[in-house]
Length: 451
Image (cartoon, rainbow, N blue to C red):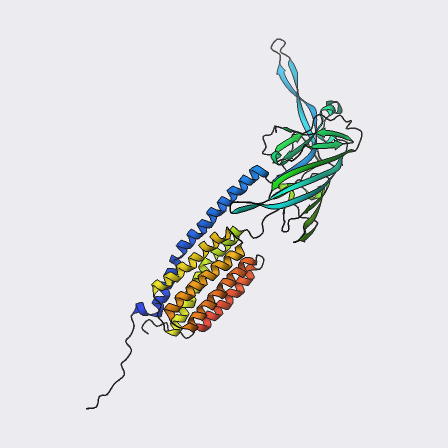
């Protein structure tokens, strides 16, 4: 008897074995992996906090950021207050006059500042910050103080008690004794207590042995600072000219005024100049009663470390969701096209390997550079996933495709991290190309859950 073999029809698959179900499970796994990824970000923030603590310790010992506001000519004057009272005996109105000492503050007509800054990186444990030694040379002149604008009579001015005042935020950073020369006479500064309880600290000379009514008063002042990370000053001259030179290759110019001219050389450092007129600022040249807080109108430079390692780690972690999603997408397309089943547990192992990349990156970065850490961590994770894929897919071509795809993906993320100014453009173009590739390779996928 002849046996006839009839082809068996393919049994319909249940929903759990369908392509749609695999997409849903992979999507849920991707979202679940955001939890350990968030822990990685928390680890980066914790290490950043430790770094800030170390920077603060170094600043407390070496000297903090430098802020300079001066020199200001301070002249006391007598102010009278009349109060009318009724004499209880005569029943007549009597005027009581009370005398108090007030102060007038005069800014220079010209203020020239020449600042030389020598910077270096200071390391402690796994952390580093920028410290500097600076020499600031100031020169300029004052005109004869004009009290007429304050409606103050000449006989009420206490010329013999005039002083020079400097406000700063870090007396500890000053390296040497501080003197100022006025018309050939030298005066030493001493710390004083601020009467207005402001956060700034102050230095003041003793009474000036000068005739302030003789016209122009020339001054020269030299001050040395040890500091960390930044220098700023207030351009209080009617015409302020500032020149700053440093060996730091990556300055950040901040404050209310940007340099009029600058030249940056990565090998030699930078030179920057500012030119500020009284017409460019919202404050005047003299004040009566109290000296205003002008912190918001300063100019200066930050000596920050370019591409701080923890900032780069944080930026890399922000792309973690993209890396996990694209990696799973690559595996999903390969398994769908090649008809090879990949278990959800295997997806989970691959996802955890992707998370491990960031912990490796953080730990290695603390002992080397970010670039070296990224290379080692990326190579380790790509190699691990590629070898694991070899046992899952059991096809060398697909394994090589996975390895190449992951290498391109991590290279793409690295390029985005390095391109600070063009990161959005490069990322958008890259994602557009990836979307096009996914649309091309997924165009023939059967999404019917019964097939």
